[in-house]
Image (tube, rainbow, N blue to C red; front, top):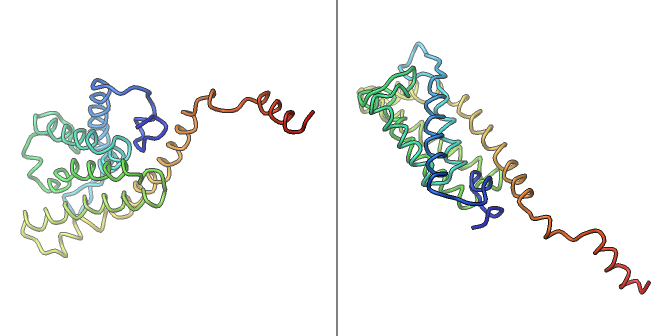
Length: 216
């Protein structure tokens, strides 16, 4: 697939692709997720805080495509499990993946990979398709987190939804809107810039063609 024809954002920035460049994207987005995890707003009625992680997950899927998006979020989980302070509030270690937010965290690689797969098949080229793909992906994260709370902590579904679903709908809708509006426009501009000037007819050639047709 050519640079201009690619539906994946990062593939429109460079003519050539390499393993080294892919590793940079994967590592970079894992660190982006870690950074946005530190944007944390605790809520008094739930152990799940508001963070920027979901935005990074959606952006990775939308920008990297399926494999790199999956690997970036899998690397993020490995970093945290290995003891790096990348989880919300600087938390680390494997135990955090088994805590109240574990359902959200475990879903990140799979949701990012699924969204990337949808993007590779053209969802990024149309705002309504991308918005649908983003909303579906974000819903999967919220459902995963809510079900984790329900089954791991033996609370009713209603209480699990109050703690893990309803408080995050407005913020996540804003994240979906931000990625959904920006990405198709960026792709369109990059695609236009990728058109070679040599492929465009020159003004003097137009004039010559016009002269011969007019018999002048």
